[in-house]
Structure formats: structure tokens, C-alpha cells
Picture 1 (spheres, rainbow, N blue to C red):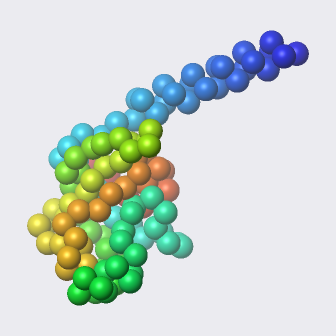
Picture 2 (picture 1 turned 90 degrees about the horizontal axis):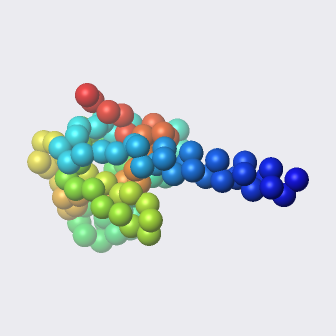
Length: 116
């Protein structure tokens, strides 16, 4: 019984690893930000008090429908993170050039939609 369980666990983990390695994103890819039903879980926007302290306007509704471009791709704590900038060159909330998003969780949650 232990052997069957161990074999099943190994196969599942190997499949999960191959899936996470197969899903990649390249710099320059374009996406549209879509507002989730609750709060953003995978796009890391600054907190409202931090935006206000820097003189910005903390209006999360303004991010809905924005077209963003992948500026760079990095790894953070074993997770893939993409750094996004606005396609029109403006800043997020009047102060932030880039925001980070967890990849591929943001796509799976519907917070980012590919434009290709």
C-alpha cells in the first residue's frame, strides 16, 4: 500500500513540475488587467495607504482594462514573478512605474488576460 501511494505521489508531483515549467512568459508580451470579483490576489498593487502617502490616487477601479507589457521575468522564493508596466507609458496611481504579478496564478485567476 505504501509503495502504491508513493508511486502515485511521485507521478503527481512530476506532472505538476512539468506543467509549471512548460508555462512561460516572455518579455514584451501584452496583457489586459481585469478586475476580479473581490480583491486582486496575484497582481501586487501597492496598498492604498502607501499610494496616498506618495501623493497618488488610490483608485483600483482605474486599473480595470489597462493594457500592460511584461517588462521582465524573475524568480522570487521559487515562484515566477513578472514585472508589468503600462503600455501607454503612464504610471500606476500617478507614482509607480511597475507592478509585480505572480505567474501563472494571475492568468488562472482571470486577473490578467492575454492579448495575443
